[in-house]
Length: 375
Image (cartoon, rainbow, N blue to C red; front, side, top):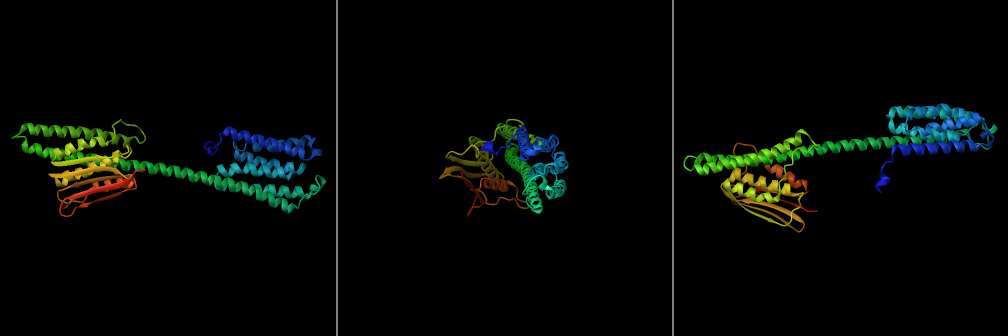
């Protein structure tokens, strides 16, 4: 099926045109036996077939050559079928490969030259062939065939241009989507890391004098978080500098990294009760990780110290994510606009055609829930 849908190579198309040209010339010279022996007529018939053979290589020169040779063939032999077939065949590549105005000029020229030649030829046709149809009928049918060929070529050119525009649009959309994805990833990395580092820096500042070992432990945690964040940021910035390239091989986050995330949150004052139930497809693991990461980061930023329950489950073909804490339900600091965290989580869920909910819980606490179908 794919072989049939694929466009044949250029050499094969040119070979097919050459075969058609030879068949046309043979049919033309054999159609009138008494003229077949005429060297001039035979030469003109073969010469008229040449534009058909080279129509894909030189569309416009082939077309206008056919217009020049066609009237001579009609005057000597009166073979209106070949003259019309050649014009119809050679105008097709002009319509497919040239701008509309140039192909329209070719169409008008072809109709006028071919029509006038046919009209003059048919008026004197009885001296060659008996039983010719009405001249007006011949010209009308010839114009219909030529115009139909031009219309098919124009339609093919329009389809190709539309397909090319669609490919460019999809490529541009893919670039925009990729940059949006990277922006979300950078936000998640920076927001989570800076929040953790801020908490750890506050802890170090408070205990460094009285408990230097605890202070050094907090500083080492800040260093570790900073190094990991810098590695991820270098990865994403490399993609932004050279789209389509492969910067470094920093692995994408996995569900196996969630316990480490919960451990860092505990060091920042948020105890996370983490549960993962069911097989999560590898393609969805980064999105699941980022949603859980951003939700826990919000707890650290707005509710620490607090307890948090984070769960990822797969049941009945649906993936569910839930992150609930017992801190204050407010997630926007007084006097400050809301951030991009909730919007980023919602976009990740909607990317898979899922649902997303986030808001204060009755009484106390805040909940984040996302779910989508697993194909």
